[in-house]
Length: 261
Image (cartoon, rainbow, N blue to C red; front, side):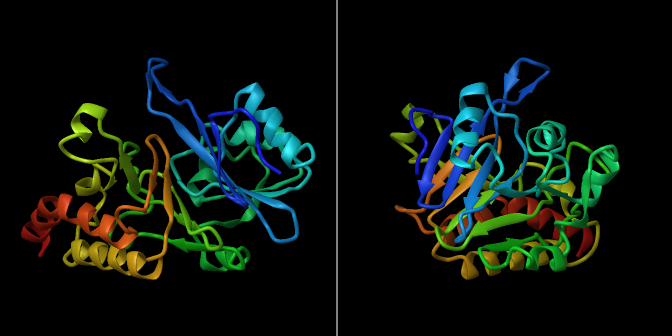
């Protein structure tokens, strides 16, 4: 089975789809958003994140999943991505709606699953097909609502595709620039400096987490990032892309060391 026509729904592997959507700041600046669909070996599905797709995309999603009946759960993996959760529950009232502690606090009226996605016990419920990673050295839920550095990053083991929100970002350079500086680029969230914990060793913990993730997920085929796009790990491996992202963030990490030790 596959989706016809739609450019918003990308069938990236046999059992993995990424659905791109619009998200506008002040109803003007479209920074984009996404969710991913994973098919389990038994034929049921899991959604990663919430997004209310356009009518045509919704129809295709429903057609693939028998009207949504085959979607077992929706895993909301970024604590600050909450806007579309109501729409997702309305569309899939039977599915487990799983989020972070902040999701529960921000939308207590929704029928949230009792388990939090940042907890290892919850992640183990999906460990037959998914790997999870949470960055060390940063606040998972920042006191500043504009700092979206912390999140749960998810990897579909079969396809080697990573689904990420904000913690990892894809910088897609203009075509003219790419002639000089090939792109797109994998980068960490631009507010990393504000997200790092205000303590000694936080920067080194973050670096260690990033390198461990790169090593453990070395065969990653692609990274699907909210707000930005998809980067394919063909010309540059995932560990190489993470190393370059760390190089780009080196000044931020060094400044943190100078301040906190």
